[in-house]
Image 1: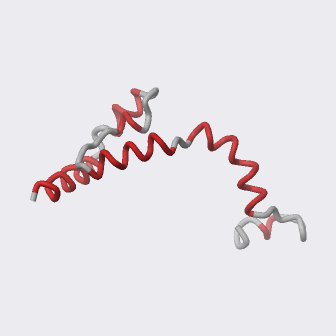
Image 2 (image 1 turned 120 degrees about the vertical axis):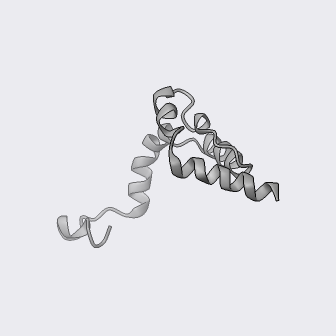
Length: 84
């Protein structure tokens, strides 16, 4: 922020991190759902890839990321590790 944003503003006109966080928080509440994220990460820790937990109302996104090679590999790798 100091390197990229402040040089573009008038002197002394730079926002604080707290101010920026307070301004964006209402928008992020609609985007981030920590309960869904935790459920997704818990499933992945069991070797289960469950993208529908992240995007329950967006089957188009789930369909696309359900085939993501790196995430499929991660789930398989965790499952294999746990089976040992």
